[in-house]
Length: 165
Image 1 (tube, rainbow, N blue to C red):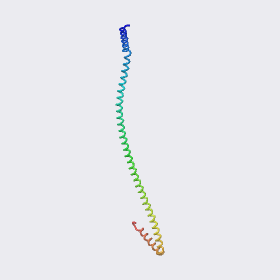
Image 2 (image 1 turned 180 degrees about the vertical axis):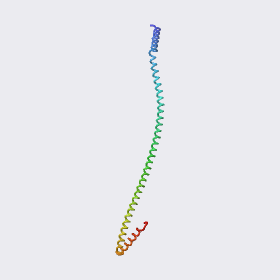
Image 3 (image 1 turned 30 degrees about the vertical axis):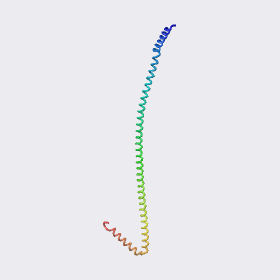
Image 4 (image 1 turned 180 degrees about the horizontal axis):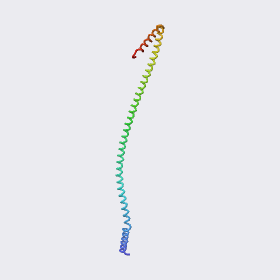
């Protein structure tokens, strides 16, 4: 066999193999590589978008947290003010109740003392009348006593008969 013929046959086989590979094998491989590179590029772009969206979401979350903390602080301060106001109102109401109770107790004590004075006055008057009665029984005789009563009766009848009275 001749070296030139072998070389020519190898060139023809190589060219046929090259044509077959270029026509049937290479296009699906390049298509798969292109699809894969597109998917990788899309994935990288999506990752970049996700990173920026994550950063935006973190900023929004931090802003919401700050807003919530501020709102919570305001609510807490308002609650503390309301509790302080309620305590002040309760203290004032307690002071009013104590003052009213003291006033009522003082009035009750004053009324009780007034009643006791009236009862004591009545008892002193009864004792004075009883003592005066005993003194008068000893010192005034019956005839003189009858004469005084008659004079008093005459005076009373004389006054009741006066016109205009």
